[in-house]
Image (cartoon, rainbow, N blue to C red):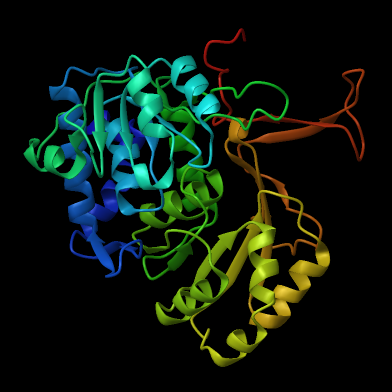
Amino acid sequence: MTNKIENNIGYWCIQAVTDRPDSIAIIDLCQYAAREVSYGELDQRMSRFAAMLWQEGLRPGDRLAMVIGNRFEFVEVMFGAMRAGIVPVPLNTKLGAEALDYIISDADCVAAVVEPDCNLFIEDVVERSSIKLRYSFAPLTSDWQHYEDALMSAPREFEPPELADDHPSFQPYTSGSTGRPKGVILTHAGQLWWIRACQEYWPEGNDERTLAAVPLYHKNAMAGAIKPMLLCGGLVVLLPNFEPRRFLNVLSEYKCTQAGAVPAVFTLLLQQKDLIDSLDFSALKSFSIGSAPVPGELMRAVKESFGVSVSESYGLTEGGPVMIGSPIDGRLVPVGSCGVAWPEGEIKLVDSDGNEAGDQGELWVRNPGVTPGYHNLPG
């Protein structure tokens, strides 16, 4: 079973589970009362979810639609499915009915887990589809199973299947800015390479605490908080959404050491100068800003306001997802730069004629995490 676990991204935090089963992995603030989830409980719930799907007849390669907001169950659904070789398709909770219809059909989803409160259309979309296996956090009809009830009825133990290195781990969709959304296939081996490289070249300790308030379906939160923090045995404080003053209060109250988000988040935070000046951020060490262009003046203002290091991150769903970072030799990264190519990866700029360019062109990426292709599209 060891190899089955080592080669499966669904078990990426198994060392932390083994070493620190009673330590808190996630503090979920989506409800009125904070919900603390230990590493041991998270591991058990992920295995229950895998067993639940397996009992229903799902097998490796089957696609599972996910429309879930920022709550700890997002993590167990996504990685629990991967334990069984089932491919989660995390969907943007802000999508309309037409886009949801298209993606669920294009991905050939055979099951769905939904949170109706985070999308007005998803129940009707699933009911119009061919999906028969339906789980909801708040089912309204007998056509749906109650998620928590079904999970607690599933076996506690799960024997994972043998998966090939190139087996799809999960399948996010692009925004469709250049046409229809495209399903990006990301493999177990590629995602394991990426998360292990994070810890090898930029190691973090289990005393780290990060705050996540941007959507979990997006790589900014998943790659910036969930994967690296739970790999090292740290703690993720999870907000259901971003509201500037609550973000700042939680950042201080829970003594978070780091946080990451998009530039718009930090622009709004800086407007709360009265609150920033009144709170204790002595535990805070760093911020990461990315997923959109980051003005140099924003980085300087954040650093000055909080007195911590601020870095710019750059990633690409198809590309790793993050393939550029801080130099491992300790060189400082100038403002306006997101760093250098990752170890074990390559990047280059190419001009319109296909020749390597100097300082501008199309960015080409090569590393073990790069997608092997788009779902249902030619290579």
